[in-house]
Structures are given as C-alpha cells and as structure tokens.
Length: 181
Image (tube, rainbow, N blue to C red; front, top):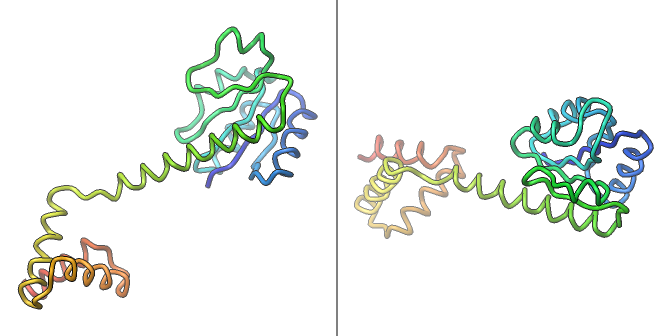
C-alpha cells in the first residue's frame, strides 16, 4: 500500500505537516523527527513518499535518500539557500515558505506517477514468454479443431474456464492439452 511518512527535525513541524495532509485526505503513516524512525515506518509500506525537511538529529536528507527502499520517493521541503546548493538526483523539492496548494499538487503528482509505474511493472509481469504463448496457442488450436471454434471463441472459452475454476491461464491450457490433446 502507498502511504506518506512525514519527517522534520522538530516535533511541531512534523505534527503540523501531518495534520495538514491528513485533513486533505492523505494516508499519513507516521510523523517522525529522526531518519531512523522514518525508515522503520517505511517497513510497513509497499511504496510511498517521505515528505521531509533537510536536517534531523541523526542524519540529513541525503543519507536518508541513500537508504530509501525501492518504490519510495522523497519530497524535500527546504529553504531556497539549501535548494540552490543542489540536491540529490530524483528528489522532488519545494521551497520554504511552503504554500499548501503547492504541497498537495506536488504530492498528488508524485503519487499518481508512482501508481502509473506500479501498473506498468504489473503489466510487464503479466506478459507471457514465447513458450507460454506457444502453449496457449496449442490449447486454442485443440479447442478450435475439436469444438469448431474460432480463435476468439477458444480464447474466450479458456478465459471463462479460468474464472469459473479459479485456475490461471497456463494451468487451464495444460489441462485442455492433457484432457483433449
């Protein structure tokens, strides 16, 4: 699940940003004052964003960035002096003083980008390799030959069989070949 972890060096800052985000409907998992606390809070999430300031008692943002697990982004909120010095690549930044509209628009953009990336990765995982495609084609051919179906009808039959039986497409294709082949 995607979430937001807030991290600022002062308790009041972390609590204020968390409250602001929660009031606007964001799922804020934790408000932290130490980088180690933020990293621990990230363990409960699959993906998400750390909204943070520049410096904490145990580290600065770049040390935290280097330790972020895959699937997490960072939104650094800092003074213009810090931002002008340059920040780590792929860290999204907002200057102080902070405008609420800028914060929410940036967070929305980051979360929607993460969701698109997650969907792309999921779709990539669903692509079949050549041997799997050949197995599916063979099962469809058997259905087409034995039951006088078109390729679309055979494919649809296999999809319905998957849904009814709770089996995956590959398992269904193997079963068709075993029973009819």
